[in-house]
Length: 231
Image 1 (cartoon, rainbow, N blue to C red):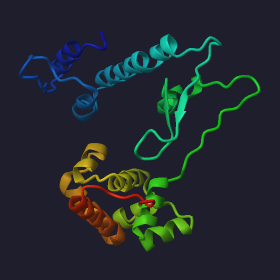
Image 2 (cartoon, rainbow, N blue to C red):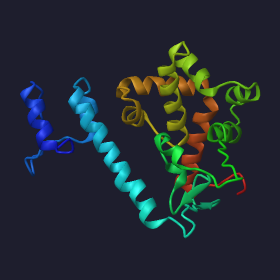
Image 3 (tube, rainbow, N blue to C red):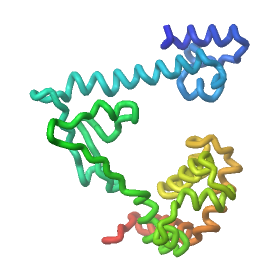
């Protein structure tokens, strides 16, 4: 059974791997995160991880869509909301068609004579951040049509390596949403002390971002609320 943590643990243990067990139940810890961290080089463990992901996809996404959200015309009609989430982004429900993984995008087929358009607001949070913080360095990058993640990779790592760009993207959005070195560790497995160095370099490059964050926190602490651009 590829979904059995006990069976997988027994096989991995026979192959010389250390298995961590829960104190309360005595069951092996075999969630996907643990598998990726400790048994990434074992093909059977990776197959089990893939099976679990597909099973979750089936039970949490595909089956509910089929059982709950098919209309009388045999099609799915998602609801879209303009003002439901705090970030201001468009959201979707019943079902959340915006949350489909790449592997499931092909199941969305428009009716005959119609098309589906996929729009993306390019790095909109960072553009807003640059404006409200009035950080001239970040604003200049956007005004000149630069790639903010590549620029971040350039001054943090000194190159545009794809892996470094992904980490730089994580840094950018961690800063936007109040993250710290621990956020980078959770997202990209960047060691805490290294993450702190990256964030410090980031604030040295964009000093007004740090100033705006500190001023906003101070205002919220003193007044009990924060303000948007509109008040």
